[in-house]
Image 1 (tube, rainbow, N blue to C red):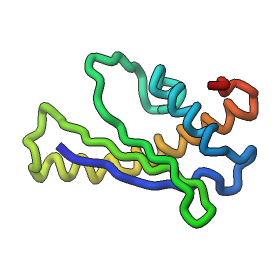
Image 2 (image 1 turned 60 degrees about the horizontal axis):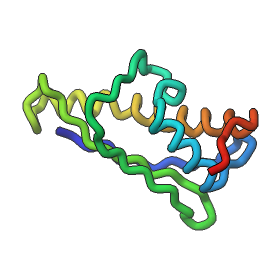
Image 3 (image 1 turned 90 degrees about the vertical axis):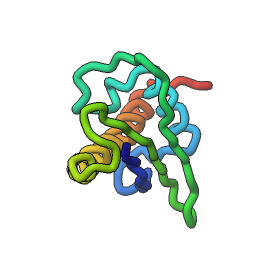
Image 4 (image 1 turned 180 degrees about the vertical axis):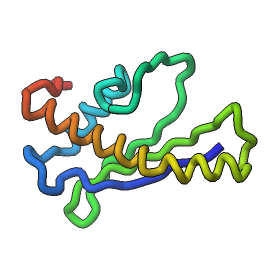
Length: 117
């Protein structure tokens, strides 16, 4: 089992800027259907509810998203060198997925597709 924990800046150079509410609404959509938010995902069948920790923060006036989850691979021994190598190799993929999530939320906002809650 390994944990991925990263924080990214939400509003860099892309427009429109997102608010905390925008990010929250987008994360709710992702929870209901992750496919549009994760480009490498080919299918998503929820067989068990797990926990993904998302924290929308204001760090010195900069909106950020902290994303953390723990993943266990049944085919790898917990804490093994194989699992550690796998986790290290996947870190960039997870970072790209989080950035793509923010980009998708931004696109939905620009298209007027973020639901009001």
